View 1 (cartoon, rainbow, N blue to C red):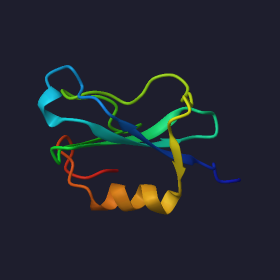
View 2 (view 1 turned 90 degrees about the horizontal axis):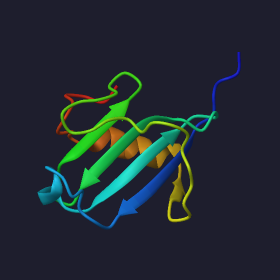
View 3 (view 1 turned 90 degrees about the vertical axis):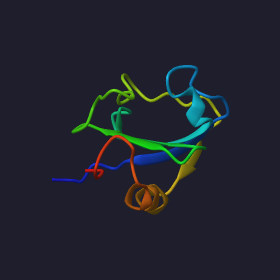
View 4 (view 1 turned 180 degrees about the vertical axis):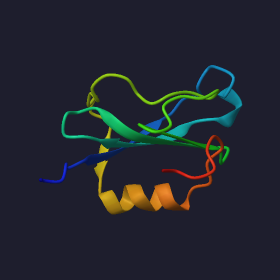
Length: 101
């Protein structure tokens, strides 16, 4: 059985959230996208140092949720390597989960 290939993207959101997390500031979003174009993992790292993680095993919590629907490129994303994504995943202390799975 062939392994599924993922693509990885970085997107910088240059605005605060406008909600209860507004004081956390701007954020960098890191996406792992499956071959079927659905997001399987997302990491959000805020200017404040707070960070959030969502995956198919941690879909939603009090801070937010895993992206729904197919991932759509808007032209401002930067494709990154799996190694770059995993470096962020493995070296970030998340506010909403003890460890990223």
